[in-house]
Image (cartoon, rainbow, N blue to C red):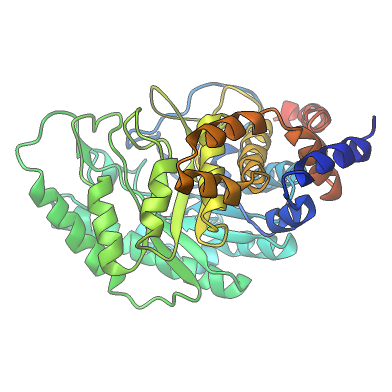
Length: 417
């Protein structure tokens, strides 16, 4: 049976529930995912004096074919994009600057160092997002940056983030689409601190100084990303969820939720609607924790489905800025991008193909039996047939076919590196 024939049969089943499948696919086409560039080179970047990873970040595995220069990285991203339906964005870190072999300190970075990325994004009709890099640097060796007690070190990082915001504003202006600039810092302590307040006050002062630069919201959107714990900050993280949620609301910037940055029993899906009560926009980094913040490639599991459902059922497709943040060097990196990005798009389609209004009505009536039965029934609906049709309509391989292209690319390109 062809993809189109399977689609027609599946579409009829969904239509029995009053679900407009074609309208759902049209909505899905409009949702960009911000795909992180650092999956392709294990967060190495292109600095002249490239440092070992630090800040509680580690990438495990040694699968061959890692990108070693900007051209290879962009080529790999292009291949991944050819396997992913829709028009998307690419998220950069500051360490992906191209300085023509000149050592440029992070607090001295300028828009010109990202011109190749801008030109490439224009050529491929992509948006770009940006992240200052506050790790893997001698001035972050002790695990403290924007909350550092040394004012000179603290100022270095303040100036780096300021430079990053100016770069992001320039990118947004050049591409005609606002750049999301996300601030994440590793700051924290391995063991129980004697003072939790003062580092947070220093962080607040640093952020206040950073945001004092007037940057147009037309071209740049600021976000702050929390974390619960990490390697080297097991007992205390300065930029906790409560800190950043309060700071974001007070300063009218975005609070970014990373699905790997909470206690193992917490889920980001439950936080989205809470923030939407008070914020016009929310940002996400979707990763997959395994026992701790391990940044595994995201799979189509219950939590990912629930994230997609929460975004869709709350009519927030244009309110939630969805980005990805995982890095796995144990598998083919192009495949990792394709698996993860296709899965987050699947979760949105899954949400779009649910009878959400009917389910809400049953909940308000107290008809929890019908609600539960319908949730379970829809797990067995022919979702895959709709997904394959969508991929075919968007000129990318269906589920049975995309891995063949990855293996061909591996043989032709990655195996020669």
